[in-house]
Amino acid sequence: MLRREFHHHASAGALGALLLAVAHRAHALSLADLSAADTSGGLKAALSQGVQAAVASLGRPDGFLGNPRVRIGLPGQLDEAAKLLKSLGQGRRIDELVTSINRAAEAAVPLGKDLLVQAVQGMTVTDARNILTGGDTSVTAFFADKTRAPLGERFLPVVHQATEKVGVTQKYNAFAGKAASFGLLKAEDANLAQYVTARTLDGLYLMIGEEERAIRQNPAAAGSALAKKVFGAIR
Image 1 (tube, rainbow, N blue to C red):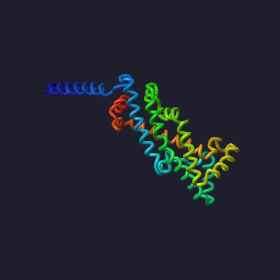
Image 2 (image 1 turned 60 degrees about the horizontal axis):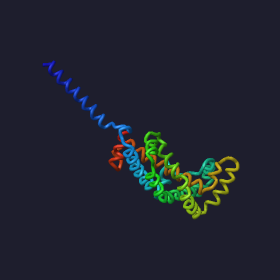
Image 3 (image 1 turned 90 degrees about the vertical axis):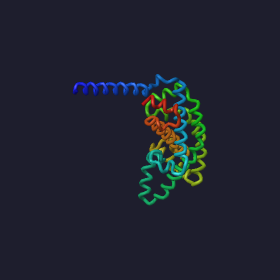
Image 4 (image 1 turned 30 degrees about the vertical axis):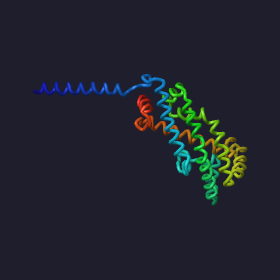
């Protein structure tokens, strides 16, 4: 009786292990098992979803200002100087400046949506493979390479106009220019519009990368069946 029961449990255990192995194999596709079309198509769907989410998240009031991961502060030594000025009763002016540059970023982001989507749609199979097998910064690197220059050109006048409205551009540029001449600030950060534009792009790429990582970690959250298939294959 004991022997029969032992064999029954052993057989059931072996069958369960076999079924588990088969199920795991059926689920555990690798990138090598996917066609090039599936790989690039799934990634395009996921990145399009990431672009939409990132633009919606950042291109609204407090999208930058209320998000500590992308909030734009003053550059380099100016940030330290701002802390000193706050202690001397200049806190309101500093806060107004920081608010204005983040509002400028929030206003600029929606204007880049079409260029970001175009970059996704123009992605090659090689681009897709590099992103899927790359590290945590592969998405950021892809978008920066494809869109940083044209988005910078598009964002710069919007940022300039937004900061001009609150009358901070001239004061910032004069102060930052002196700081740069003493080596306390990078030369490219001495111009307010250029500095804010660069930080806007950094924040935008960061958030797109965050969205892609979220899908990579949880393929079920992908908006398309193909994206689920591709990201499920690399888990």
